[in-house]
Amino acid sequence: MPAYKFLKKGSFEKIDKFEKRVNDMAAQGWKVKSFTNYGADLIILFERDR
Image (cartoon, rainbow, N blue to C red; front, side, top):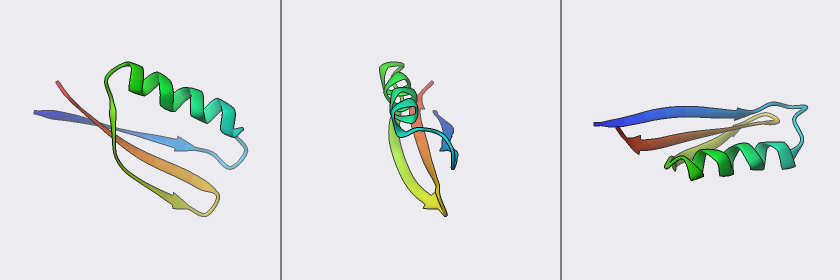
């Protein structure tokens, strides 16, 4: 059964800091399932098997 997690980049967060968070999630085995933007925010949906 898969587990899901959202990661949101805020309007004032630097892209380097957000990129590090995305890479940390990938190192833990999470894979990007989908992504979208909402105004200046970027939202990523991650998935991994439990």
